Image 1 (cartoon, rainbow, N blue to C red):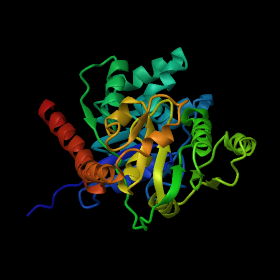
Image 2: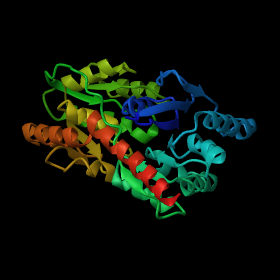
Image 3: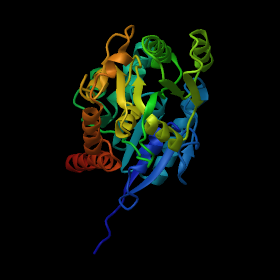
Image 4: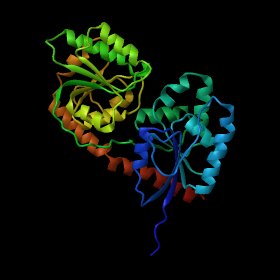
Length: 354
């Protein structure tokens, strides 16, 4: 009996936990993987070709596509799978368009925010979207925005989650509110602290706010906590390992994430899995997961005491609903099946058209 041929997938994207998670979703018995990325801090595979993707250096426009073309010519991918509609896709498109089937996974701000920042970025994003054979997104609203930007409106769209990687931790809940988004303006951690301050003023107090992560605003956030006299109730725990992050989910009653723009945040899915009651901003992607008042709280007004309001939700019902959602849509197994369906459909389409 002939051995089934492996599918060669060339993955291109940033050195990121998300790309590392995506890589882990593929069964090595079915596929052969090579990766082109910006580093090896998170992506630790033997065939990881590290290149420069900055748009600020003219030489990258010549050298990076040339190197990508050489790697692809040697590897002969059946599919090229790119992550983010920015330079991580522009250079591969310049190198490989019309040579191989190309899939693009959009992440969120690459199509929701960046194209609004300048005409040049919007033109680049549209150029990328025009030359891909399939798009995946983790939310319908995000995928629909990508199609809206694309000059080619009939590109197949798949809704696929990166999924979560469950870690066994204690779920012994405490009066902890957990925030673990990046410390930059998009994620509105200042508003999280302000909300906690309002909450703290309105009742006898035993709750803590735990802020993980770091970023350009970390120092200013710590100063704000000092100014509001919250140092005894707010803890900054820095950038955490996956095990440490999971442990905080396990201890926390509430999870809060109120960015101004987002796709489906993996941290939201993780919080749902570990039994936290989610408080999220009013965004289309969040509404695909959270039914306000049932399995979480959608904050439409950031000036009120929405933390206190969230505590009126039945936590048992919320946990049951969230567990069911994660098991059906965001486990590693569910994620793998979704991504595999993209490959199967695209190869079938290519075979039929050849």
